[in-house]
Length: 175
Image 1 (cartoon, rainbow, N blue to C red):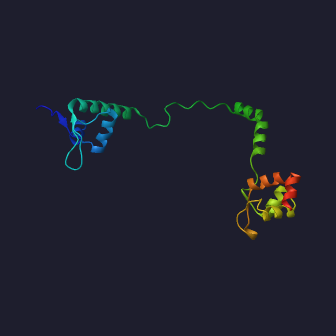
Image 2 (image 1 turned 90 degrees about the horizontal axis):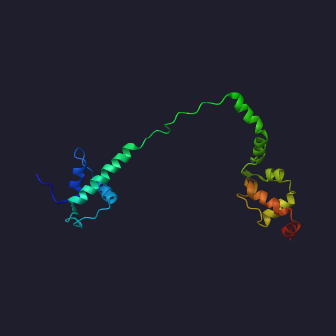
Image 3 (image 1 turned 90 degrees about the vertical axis):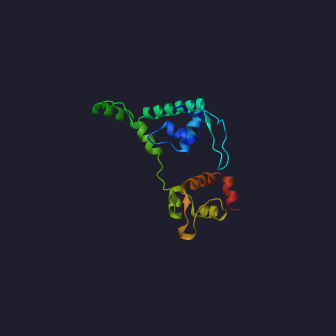
């Protein structure tokens, strides 16, 4: 039996996978991979796109290449054997050699909570109450909430404390 010269996506799907025919959408993916254009363009409900036999062979090649690539992929996280663990003495040496770096890292870690109350803000910054209140009144110190529920973000509070060190800024704050 002679194979048809022009084929639809449905026929191509059955030819690519006879046991479980591919959907039109899957066939369209392989058509795009093969960079093939239909010989007869489909339009609307009645006319269906048809492809030449030589183009179908290109689509088959793209399908087989994709299947090989898919089969070649591994789902394993790692195929290498883990390296032997180093002796405990060597690890101890590394830790003692880097104590200074660990201490610097610990000092760099932030000990301030993200949101501070008014009392915590005054304790952490060491600012006088009047300066903090002036910053709040003038809108120089952003905050959320009101009254006893008012909270200050640590970064905004630090920035405000740095600005207050400048005498000219402080003079403007109390105008």
